[in-house]
Length: 153
Image (cartoon, helix red, strand yellow):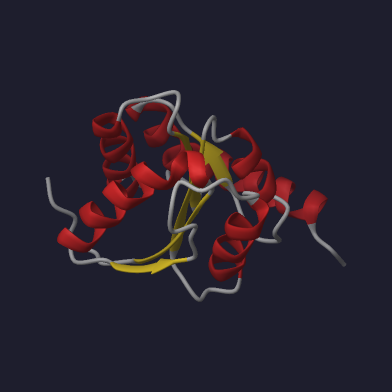
């Protein structure tokens, strides 16, 4: 199913997420979305915060609507992204976790682990997340609580 709303995406990864980042970029561009690629641009070993943080900052500063970060497990990438104010980055490993990340957490970023899932599943996870809708209600109250505890006032 194709998404009618077009978004701008910030992508960032380390060497262990490079291959899937490229596949996700192809998918997003084919769907008509804008992509800002913050790297890395090869499978040469790098430190993920150097690429994940700029992608998260782009989303946090509204320079991109949504973001996807990738690594071997996706754990460190999610942690790094979530240090940026305004980011709600969900580590997802299934279509269901992606759907819930949007419905219940209004995740504005996804983190994926290239060593944990197939490339086909990674694209399906991104598609499911983009197509998801935030339910609001009690979930909005909880997000507000998260934002209050993480605000850098």
